[in-house]
Length: 454
Image (cartoon, rainbow, N blue to C red; front, side, top):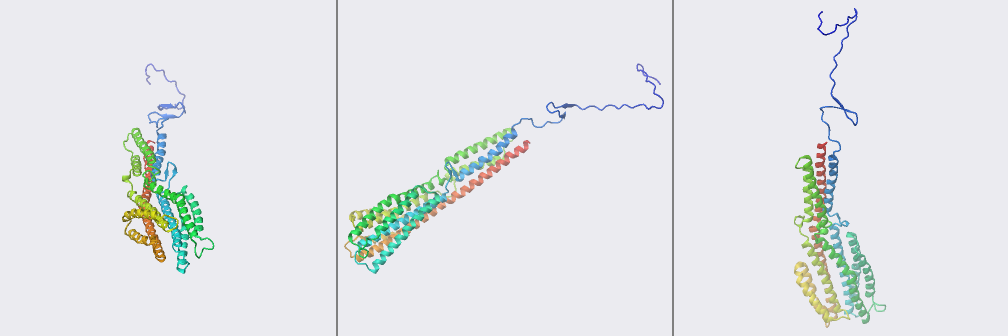
């Protein structure tokens, strides 16, 4: 055997012993140990997100904040909440105005029936007859029934939209008025069959005093509540604006819209994608809801001005009619100034006649039927029977005028419902639904970016 030069000769092996085979060692992979944990990673594999990144945390915060902003905008635009908390719905304000109007109509009718009762006693002081007694009893019963209806109307008005301070005070004043009027209408003992002149004069003076007191303590507070309700229904910054005030919607909706726009810009810069469909939809809905609740030109329904103006006109007409009839009765009752009362009646009737054309043909016919009975009633030299007949006809005709006026007030209330209540209901529902949809879109849009980042 030849040996390579320079290499030592192998030592001889004993006979029968196999020669061991040495395995060639495998290459050792390049392994680096992680200093912090000791866990090894294979070189060349891609590492995960850099530790300490705040992107997922920020996305989670935005995913929670953006829907909240959308929902708050929907609530503010719906009119359910305002700067002072929960708001009354337009339906509640309309109901309160309607109940107050009914209370005013009913009280005036009752008060005038009491005046007619006293006027009949003043005109006809003769011995009682079955016809005269029946007429007195009928008017007295109608007064009692009417006066008992006033209080429940005021209570319903307080329950509809809150017990304003004027309503409880009006109820207390009505109780005092009813007690005093019962004493006024009840003749003193011994004069029930033929009331003397002095009791009639005393009752007439009491009736005038009670009327002035009722005007201050009952009618004026109720008229204040009615006027305040109409102002709220016709104002863009109150219930009629379908919000707790336009300032609140502008504040909440404006800030929410700006916040959503800034969020979209930040997200586009971080993810290098210009448009996030979810955030874009949420921004458009929030902006649209804000505009719907603050811009009258794009609100639902017609302008409430016409209905509010009609309701105001009917309320003013009812007050004019009441003062007119009281003036007429004052000229019949003893202790007054018939000449001055006649001049005042002529002035008031001229104003009402000028406004009668706007009330429709039914009111015009009822008004003419009433005015034709005025001259026979105040003609003091006419026979008693003619004046009693004129008083009876005048009382019935005026009750018909009040009935037509009450119907017109009900029509005006329906107009308020159609132009304010129903549109406000639709806008409130639309604002709430749009706020929820915008919140869902914002959640989905930001959530999608969060999943992509993970």
